[in-house]
Length: 222
View 1 (cartoon, rainbow, N blue to C red):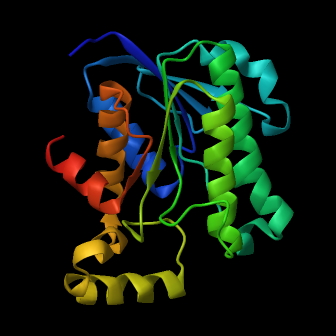
View 2 (spheres, one colour):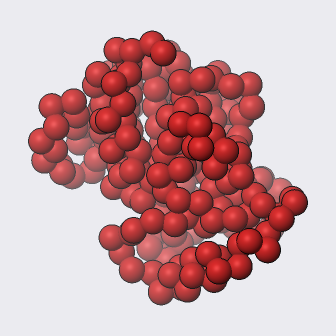
């Protein structure tokens, strides 16, 4: 495997983003990691170069895109964002802008987190928005742009979400019943998604989107 690679990570404070940062730091192929945050996290690891960004003006950070791989782990909920337009800004507009700048700066590969069922034809606002983001990134981002579409995510969040906790419990109990075509809806751990994202960035497959079942298979061989 080639080494001396560099990466730029957006969303390093989220569930998958934190795990992805850990794995990238442990990966000897990467010599420098740029981490884009709104506020400083005071990282002590010398492999990290933190970039404090104003997401309303991402273009002025274009020089930070001088990397091999860009990873986008941005995401929120409508409840947390406060409105549908605010949700779209985080889950659609920012990823689209990042992808456009990545292409402009000749980034080799871009991998972003979407969601199972993402499609512009969805009647569900959440999955429709994610589908719109996918299409925008494929249209205006680097040629080698990929979407990972996890189902319910397992992991330790900093924030407590009662409904999500209940859903995770039920998913873990009953997901063995999900067979055949339903296997892609099984829950997946944050580390499995992060492992798959790194593998995809380095293998540059022809396939453009990967569901939970496919991500699990990739992670098994990580």
